[in-house]
Image (tube, rainbow over all chains, first blue to last red):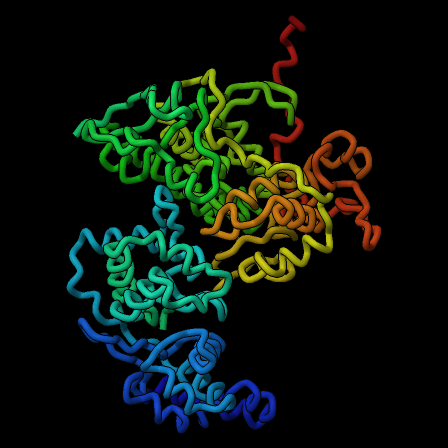
Length: 219
Length: 347
């Protein structure tokens, strides 16, 4: 746990004294820390997750939007998002704990993405093109047009993807492409993922893994 | 590496559609993707295929620009034009007074068919425009976008910004014939077929909330993240003013069906596209810079195809009956109403 977190947690506690009941409905990072004990084996106490080469990568949760995490956990619990790994853990959390762990991880400072360091220049150039400009000749709109400038995420529907692990981004895009994941609103991701080649997926995954979101935010 | 312009006239006997199709593209290395049918993927997405006798042009990309055998100073200026086109917000409060970029409406960096690809202006102008009843140059056309779609004040003719934007338009037209004698494939925002039922506010509102609000927000204010523009505002002060082309119902319906939701063109039915256009066009936006001070007179003179000056059924609000010019306040677009060629004789 880093100082930044402690500082934010302190602020949150202070605010909690004023608006305790509202925060309880919204999720409480302090309680989330305890409830997250079940998450940390994979997602780590600092929320950094882990890129696993040639295996199942565990996403970085630190700094993700709380409402986005809440939706994903409910989708796991209710079968809208399939993951043999996540389902048993999501099922251990009740509705309040879902809110609490989401509050906890959203408060943490974004950690660096892993898995993009081996990508060559050509792959990264393609990744940057897809991320910032898209490839309209293939009707691939830029990632940035929904995930926001720098891929930092927009609201609760479009998660931050900068500083996410390459293995995780790659697996998710592939899942959308293969119609194994479909819990995005209005099929906004699915329709685009289907137009990405396997090389495209590798390229954007590596490029976003190398973008340091905490630096981009000026932290 | 040299790059050469080529104009191809395809005559493929085995298919009926493409015989006589005029096709132009910019080709590198003498090998051209465009020798196969261009825009094939668009027909898979629900767009019409190029028809016999149409001009089909594939504009060069920014990668082509880097490789092109043109003066490096010209490349710099075209690149600057591209940057202004895709990040027009860098001109905010100087020439632009709303939250739009050129590329907010002209998707795919101005290259995309059915998204009003902008190279068409470079090969069809100068020409007479009904909107201002005189012959317009490319610069004057771009100035019109600043005055209406960007709710702004255009950069001067011949200024660095204007030249750079013109150069980008013209670069995209590379290889296309000047003053083409054929209709252009994918020009403008072609309107969907007339809907079965007259466009309806309540149906449009429901369809907007279901399909559009996730990005453009329930109240049409668009979306900013950390102060940076992400999703443009379809109405309100952040959007185009009443004089913009897209304030017209048919243009809005054409934009919507051909381009929205982003990444899913032609997913909305004709009826949905018209209904959403009707709902969005029934909201307020900054006043038309041609406003005479009287909404009925302004409507009569300039608004045959928009809802401007009409009373909304559900609350009797007369659209455009206000003097809110948006963030530009008193700033006047100097190009609006500028007379031209008054000394030319009648014939």
